[in-house]
Amino acid sequence: MAASPHSPNSTFRRLRGQHSPAEFAALVRRAAREIGETVSCDARYIGRVESGEIRCPNYAYERVFLHMFPGRALPDLGFSPREAVRGRSAQRDPDPFSTLTSPTPSKESDVLRRAFMAGGSATVAAATLGLTLLGDTRRFPSRAGESEAAAVEDAVRQIRLLDDRHGADALYRRAAEPLRTAYALLDAGATRQSTEDRLHAGAGELAVSVGWLAHDSGRFDDARSHYAEALATARVSGDAGLEAHAFSNMAFLARDCGRSREAVRAAQAGRRAARSLGSPRLLSLLALREAGGWAGLSDRKACEEALTRAHTEFSRGPAGADPEWMSFFGEAELESLESRCWAALGEHARAARHARRAADLQDPHFARNVALYTAELAGDLARAGAPDEAAWAGGRVLDLLTEVHSTRIRAMLSETARTLIPHQRSPRVGAFLTRHAAV
Image (cartoon, rainbow, N blue to C red):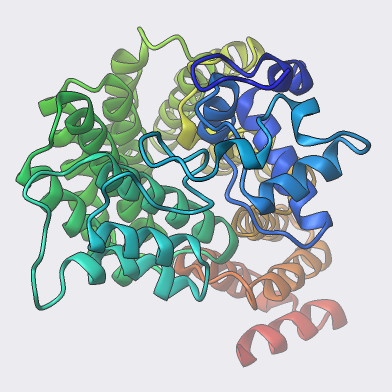
């Protein structure tokens, strides 16, 4: 039976089975690639379907769902027939990814959401929100409404999706524009408290996302500023989830900047913020961030204790309280973060085993992470005395860098190339060094 506007879609929930919303979203994206569709499905979208908020998916999602569940029609998946949800002026659109309008949208918010979701190049998609609302006319709604809050949330998802596929370098400067717009909307105020809460959360998550783009493209000072902005937003709005996210990224940045003790403190602060959220996976990630800081301090005992906590929390499995932004955090990322700990402690052969497992486990959808884990593997193999294997892994990274643009990954690969110079007489190593020098 199809779900009503106010009733949960229990049929779709049963079809999800034992998968977490994030895991099921990954299956949806994979099915989309199988039929040549592009959807930015995440845990929040699955939640909106199951809550009954989305009564009927757009045509792209419909094709994907029917591909996943052959022989069924939309009502068999718990959705309302398309004709039953068209033409409603007084109700929320069945899926903002379809018509991308609201009952009373401002011209600017309608345009920006259409442009964001219509695709196009990465830089155009990332720039649209800011350039639409912050043009010469400086036209804002007097008070932000649901469509503006939704536009900020869509911006976060689109930036994450594009980063997963292409890396940060092409996105950072353009993505800063939507961030300024989000805070301008927040400053303008909202029509109701629930909308203002969404704007705070959306602006804060956008600050973290833009901070990550700066981080991954080597702009560490900019990243620190954006993360601090997200943390301030979390503190003002009392958003413990956003606070934990900001501290997680601040710990990551501190480790990359060589400030290991700061990484430990930030991870511990994030753990305190996350303690009441009911997400073991978030606690696992924060324990891994802490372990990385202890490894940087050469404190093996404290590092191993944090790693044990990370595995214990991870083994508890996914939960409904897992944040949407954690869709990237699965077994592959856990293996990668543990690999970096052993590398920092000088155990490169052990690090290579974990990095290899990370690369093998990673969903190809996350092209940036596949390149990252393979670059880690190449570096670990080079330092572990396996130059030919390192050169092979380095060649795979070069293949991926035709699609992925990440200063951080390129820097890692350059360090591996320098480590391999003494082995350049090996044909495989020589070929890799020549190719690396050319690009």
